[in-house]
Length: 281
Ligand code: AMP
Image 1 (tube, rainbow, N blue to C red):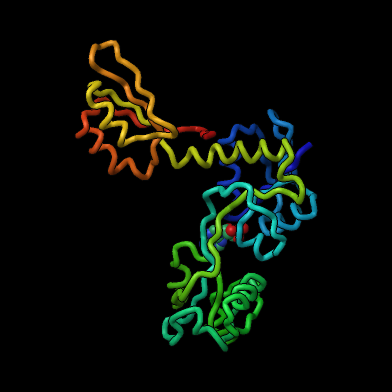
Image 2: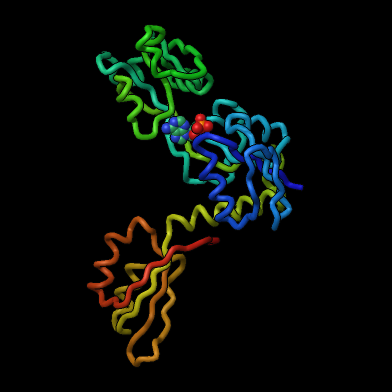
């Protein structure tokens, strides 16, 4: 049976479970179960820590796994990212006390930099030719400058509010991260793993899109079609009323705000927007 390692706690847990359910997998999670069988697919979910998943997938203990790009980088196994999952977005960033003279990453030459991501940080400084001293800590990295053990930190940031609360100022990004699906070495091309990737990608891609339907006078078809090209071209079907058509298309959710008034101006009426569950281009 194919196994998929899934984060069992922390920030990646709930969005990962939601994604798997949205992809149509039927399973139950109990607090204690380490592994559950999916009812409707030949797949076992293994619930483990997000930071153990790179190792488990790399060893082939799981055929595939969901974890953060930052954790994969830190593990340093070079597993290819099969699908970018669009949640758990954050950046690994360098920050210094607000009062520091450091303005750029290059200014960190000679500085002591505390981080829970020593491998990624060292590799970055080496590549950038910045001679900084990396101090590996397991947690509470943001207090390191305050207690005098470091001049700067490298830590995961999403909104930046934790940095601000701790009197720190961001000076640059080392790595962009989000949750990704990875496969065990040699497993990426297997049919079962490919199916998991396709199923998850279909949900992730659909989340940023909407299905748009509208009616319009036939003479407005070209003007409207130019606004909503869709995946290939919009579907245009005649209405029962002579001289009218219905136009269907797929649009970016982020563009709707600007698009709706333009569709109205172009002659669109009865505009409907619906979510899309899955999209396989
Ligand atoms: P956890 O420590 O188990 O809550 O999960 C940490 C993982 O969530 C990290 O390795 C990142 O991949 C991801 N993540 C997303 N945003 C953040 C953030 N602001 N701080 C820490 N981790 C984040």
